[in-house]
Length: 347
Length: 200
Image 1 (cartoon, rainbow over the protein chains, first blue to last red):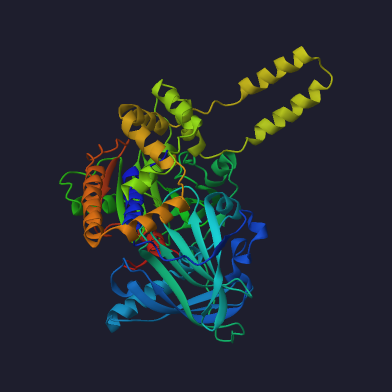
Image 2: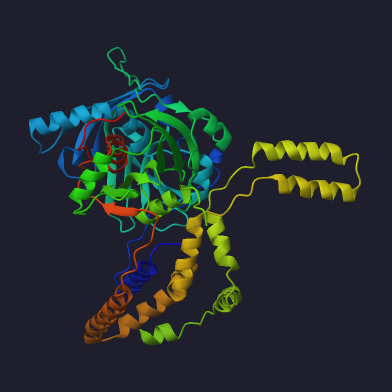
C-alpha cells in the first residue's frame, strides 16, 4: 500500500511552481548520466563490498546531525586487509568531555561488527538494489583524501524519501565519502575519509572477532523449524521494496538466542528477531511502560517503540512471542510487519 | 503570467487514468487487491511441490490428458492452504472505511511527474520583461498568499485514526529498559551510543 503523503507532494509541487513564478528558478544542475539497472554492468561498489577486497587504512569523520553527544560528530580509524578482516577504532570527537569520549569509544569498539556491517553505505543485494534504486553518475570529479572520485547519486525509484550522495574512488570503488539525506534534503548521516592509505602497515592491526555466535540457516520454513526447534514466525507484509536477505541465529551475550531474519531493499537492512527462549524480559517492558506513563500493569501483548536518529526499533512480547524489529522504515510499516508475522487466530 | 499559463496547449489526462478512475468508482477493487498482493513477500514454491510435480510429470508421460488433469488437481489439492495474513483484512477494511482519502492519496502519488514545457519558461520570461515594477512585486506576493492558503488547506487534514493492532503499542522516549541488542542495532543504523552491551 502507498503510505507516503499526497500533501507533501502537493507542497513540493507548489514550491517548485512558486520558484518558477517568482523568477527564482533553481540553479542549473550538473550533468548526470543514469546508470543501467543491471548492477553487473555498473561500477564495482554496486556488486560487492570493496572494503573487504581492498586493503586500506584511513581516518574518517562520521556525522549524525540528529544525534546528541559524542556520536554526533567523531573520527575513527578503519583498517582492512583485503581478505575480509577489518578493524574500526574510534579516534576523537569534538566538544565532548574526556569521560564522555572514553565511554563512547568503549561502546564503539564493542559494536565494531555492527558498525562495519550495517552503518556504512553498502549494496547488500544487487537484485533488490536494481529493483528499488536508481543510480546516476555526475560528469564532474572530486578529490577526497587525495583520491580522485566519481560522484554518484543513489535514490529510490518509487518510494518518496531520502537519497545518498557518494564519492567513489575511481580506481578501486571504495566509498570515500557518503551523505545520506532525507526527503527534504536534510543530512541524516555523513562519512568522509580524511586520509587513506592503500598500502597499510597491518602488523599492529587487531582484527574484529565476532562474538555473537551467528549461525546462518537455510530459509525454508521446514528446515528452520528443525534447526531452531520452534515454529519460526514469518513476516508476510514488508515495507515496500523490501525482500528477504538472510536467516541466522544469534546470541545476545546474555545466554539468550534469537532467530534473526534480515530483510533489505537493496541498501537498508531491516531486522526481525524472534526470541528462541520465550518472550522478552518482563522488567524491560515494565520499565518502558512506567517511563511512558502507562500507570497500569504492562499488557500481555505489547510492544515498545523507540527511535534513534533515522532508525526505529520495536521490541515486546506478542501472543507469547518475544520479538524485536529494527530498521529505517516508517513505524506503521514495522508494526504491520509484526502483525503479519503472527499466527492466525482461530475465527 | 496568467495569460502565459492559459495560453499553453491544454494536456488531457491519459485515457487509462479515466478508465481506472471509473473502475474504482464503480467499486472494482481488483487493482487495490493487486497492489496489496504485490507488497507481500514473494515466497518460493515448497520443495514438496517440486517433488510432487516431478512425480506427476513422470507419470503423465504414460497417461492421457484426462488422467493427467485429474492427477494435477489431486496434487494441488494435497498442498497446504496458505491463508492471507490477517493484517491484509485490516488494511483493506481501513481503506474501505475511508475510500476517498486513500483514492486521492493513491492517484496523486502515482501520477507521472511531468516537466514544465520549455515554452512556459520562454513565455514567462517575455511577460516578466514587459511587466512594470509594481506588477513584479504585487504578483509574487499575491501568488505567495494564494500558495499559503493552498498549503494550509492541504496540511489541515484531520488526524488519522490510530491503527488497531493485536497488541498494545507503547512509545518510549528514552532507551531505559530497552533490550541492549535492539539498542546496538538501532544505534548502528541511526547513530549515537547510549547503552552498553549486546553482541558484536
